[in-house]
Image (cartoon, rainbow, N blue to C red; front, side, top):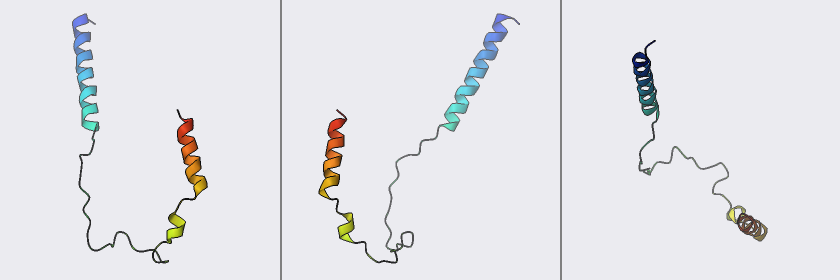
Length: 73
């Protein structure tokens, strides 16, 4: 096989792979999430509103997070 033919085939193959990669690379653009008045997509759990005491972290958890963040330095 001549060198010119091999270069041409290599160029065609490289352009094919590049165009395939560009076609497959799909990054979604920034979109705005709109809220709606009907919350049918997010129903209230059977227990009603969540307990606020369960959401508050205790002091041990905050101390652990602080220690982990300092240990990463």
